[in-house]
Amino acid sequence: MEKNVKSLSTYALSIAIVMVATLFLKVPTPTGYDNLGGCFILVIATFVNPIGALLAGGIGSMLADIMSGYAVWAIPTLIIKGSMGFLAAILLRKECCKKKLQIKSVRVYLFAILMSLYVVAGYLIAGIYVIGTIPGSLAQTPGLLVEAVVTVITYIVAASALEQVKFRKLVDL
Image (cartoon, rainbow, N blue to C red; front, side, top):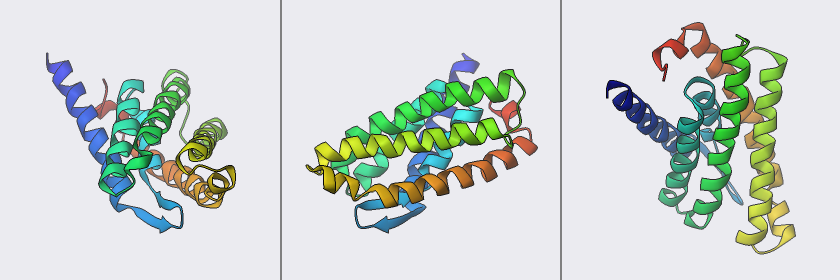
């Protein structure tokens, strides 16, 4: 029972962290906004587990879209950011936990870049349906790429700091 309470609490807190990071740590762009939610999804993927990252990425980001007036993007965001969290957790936890790989490694950097590009591709595909045109969707590309770069850099800084303070032991689920 105690393990269930800890898991539920960790998942709820993870969702809230992603939602707040997406809502309040953002920069408006012509096609939406860039935010730091992706950074926290990757951090949660590294230190929690695939289910926590799926829930935090999907629900936290979706709630932020709804609350910030971009409800039309809620379902694509749920799918894109949720699957990003899940896939990232599988890749990053395998590398960092099983192989005792440090966050500051080329493989972890490449996984973070891959996941950020996955999000860019997901939003480009979703944009064709939400915006209605391929050129309209492609107009998002510069903003999405900037967000991807910022996500990777902030993830490396935040995850490295958390690794230094042995954060993984605190959230052992």
